[in-house]
Length: 341
Image 1 (cartoon, one colour):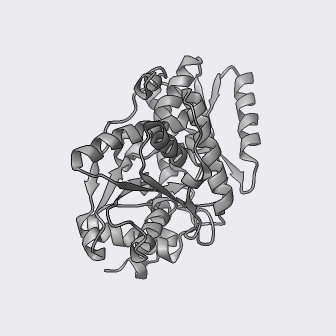
Image 2 (tube, one colour):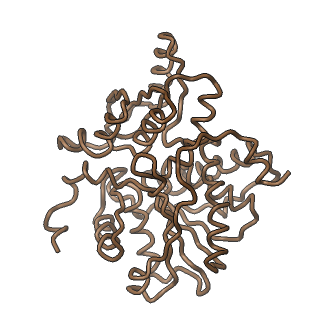
Image 3 (cartoon, helix red, strand yellow):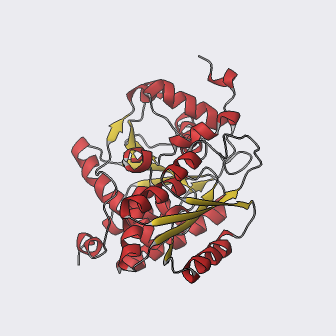
């Protein structure tokens, strides 16, 4: 059975517009004199101002509907891109949505808790419940689901980031999409750069490359967890994806990389390198990043470019996972003097 046949066995609920663009970054490339730079615009998936969770949610929402669910239940940080897209997906599918928002960072700015993704969550009709930082979110999520089930709400639990094996299939599909786009553009040796957080996107890409036998390099940039723990998490999930697809073989640990040098003071706290990356891409290419994931990932890419970390014949593909709505909740972290022209 081919990979295409294996993927088509699994139901999907249409939420996005595909394929997302694969576009050059000519002005950024000119600043560094090469290699060829491209950006995969998964911030342009169309659902709720876009983002990588759309690909995952197509599989997860289909499974929820198959199970007869009436309420999607999930969790994330206060400015969670995943919660925003889950709330929108629920609305699109005629489902309710409840989400736990963890206060992972110490921030008393009113806009952090009311603007950006939080505003959009409420626009899509999600019921939001704040929880303190450090809460065991899996336990809290299970408890919420049990309460809803007792009320006859038929919950379907989606893990943080939509990052289980079923959700990660969205990024197996992304590799299939990229293979066609790279071939059309004449990209012979792409090197993918991606944020590594809840692990589903990173793991799905790794599983997709393995399943298609593509020798492309894949580099993750961690946003929360130390390198060894993050790489182990990605590896385990990527192999679970292969198991779900019924594919032979396993991914070797040497294929998984998650640089932890750009986390800064912690998850959700932009470092100076994050701010530089945000402003550089905005001014060089007119593209917005976010301060939690893609800003830190672009900081990692800039460091690699400065350190000439790419092989001479490689093309770089930055996976833009979205998140720009969070900028409106992060004005406190983006000082006016740093944004001045």
